[in-house]
Every structure is written in structure tokens, then in C-alpha cells.
Image 1 (spheres, protein in one colour):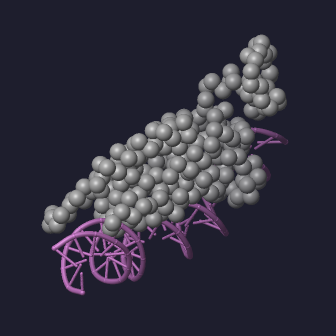
Image 2: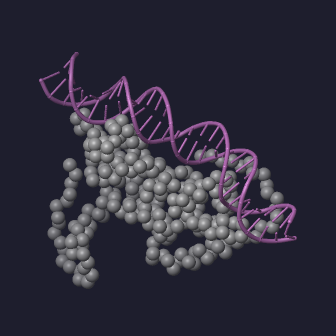
Image 3: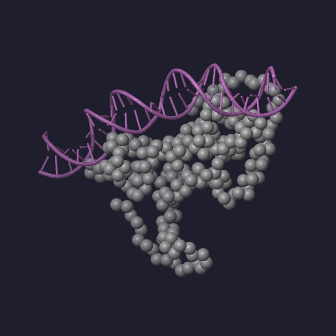
Amino acid sequence: MLETLAALAEPNRLRIVELLRAGPQPVGEIGERLRLRQPQVSKHLQTLKKAGLVQMEPVAQQRVYELRPAPFRALHAWLERYRELWDARFDELEGVIEELKLRDQVKERSNQPKEKKNARRNK
Amino acid sequence: MLETLAALAEPNRLRIVELLRAGPQPVGEIGERLRLRQPQVSKHLQTLKKAGLVQMEPVAQQRVYELRPAPFRALHAWLERYRELWDARFDELEGVIEELKLRDQVKERSNQPKEKKNARRNK
DNA sequence: CTGCTATATTCCTGTCAAGGAATATTCCTA
DNA sequence: TAGGAATATTCCTTGACAGGAATATAGCAG
């Protein structure tokens, strides 16, 4: 998921994906249509491939790139978990939920000395 | 769209968003739950706010952050344009959708089965 | 093989952004 | 008011990453 988002969060890469939506295309044509230099196109395509967003099929000396459905499906599934947030049909529920959360978080903390905060996690 | 993707394409920021899915939370609690230091939480929240993903409401000295629906809606709308790519059902729906577009709106009658249009294939 | 076309890879450089630490700001309460 | 709690901001350093240029590789035609 993160990899998918990271791959899409780059202007030219997003443009490439948008272009590929129209169908599979060889590297040269992508660069031509998007006015990008060939090496950058290749590099971006490698990134997209590593993220699983595209796959490649060699045709003679050409490499034809094509979108893969899986990451989009995954992204959609992820977004579904937020449907409650943005789908109008849940408007009534939203109010209730919000209220509950607000109540829950109002915790009073009188002066408590903080504990040591050496906990350190990295990714 | 790009801004939304960029904002989400960072591990800790994505974690914050995931956490906020459970409801609005003050900065301190976010940091505590995700084991992040306060300044980084604040900074990430500023980024999310600039991207329109969250909004803030001051409560005493606390700042309660909350997800905003709009970007998620937009992301969903964007993904919809790729549905043809990844939704298996689309193949069956294709004909119907086209028909609906042509006819604008047909509210009432469920009508007779339509014949299949020739499926669009990429070259 | 030779050469040509299409693409990939490498090296370099500049930019940008994230984390750490310290400090500033805001707002409450006694 | 002072002081403390909660959060924001600044400065710094470092790593990642995108673009440019040059070069390497693959695969076809003759």
C-alpha cells in the first residue's frame, strides 16, 4: 500500500500511469507523448514495476508496459475502510461517532510528572 | 490529487491517518499511541493539513485533529476511472453503462436484455 | 559479424524532506 | 500574574530521489 502510494506520488509517474490507462504502450511512445527523456521514462517504469503497478512484455526490441490491476484493487479496498468517513449515506452515523469519540478523549490530566521517554521505534 | 498521494505516501503520516480513522484525537495522544515524538507529530499534521486531509479544532491547549472527507472522496473518484482495469464485473456492466450514458437517465422501467457491444480490446 | 533501434543502467549533482534537539507560542489554572 | 501543559516552530544534519548526460545492453536486419 505504502509502496503503491509512493510510486504514484510523483508527478511524472502519475502521468505515466494516467497515460497507460489508455492501454499498453512501449517506452518510446510514453516518452514522446509526455515529453520526457527516454532514461527518465525507463527509470520511472522500473519504479512502477517494482511497486507492482505495471508489467512489461518484450516485443522485438521494444518493451511494452501495461498497468496491473492488483494495486488498484488494493487501493480501492483500503479506501473502502474510509467509506464511512466520506460516503454521504453515513452522515447520520458520523455525528454519533464523533460525539462518542469526543467524550472519550476528554480526560483530565492533573499535573502528572512525565515519565522518561526513551522509547524509540523506527521503521 | 498529487498532494493527497504525496501526503499519504509517508509511513508515519499514513499511520496517523489510519489512527484518525478511529476518530478525532489531540496531538499528544497521537504521538503516544504511535510512539512518535511530539514535534514530528505536529509537523506531519501540518503537512496533512496543508494537503487538506485533516482539520484542527482547538480545545483548551489541545489541538484536536480530525480527518476531512473531501480528499478521500476525490481519491475514490480518481480510482473509479480505473475501475475498468480492475473490476471484474465491469466487463458485464460495460454495455449497460454505455447505454445509460446514451440515454442520460432511465428511471423506471427495467427493460429487456441488451445485446452485447463488441468489447474494446487494446492493441 | 556489423550496425541500427529501442531500452536500460550508471554516475553525478542538486533539491527536498524527515528526524532530532532546542526553543517559541498558546492557553489553562492556581 | 507565574508556572506548567500542550503544541508549534526553527535550525541542523542526513538520506533519498529526480533529472541530465553518457554509456551499456538487447534484439533485429542485412
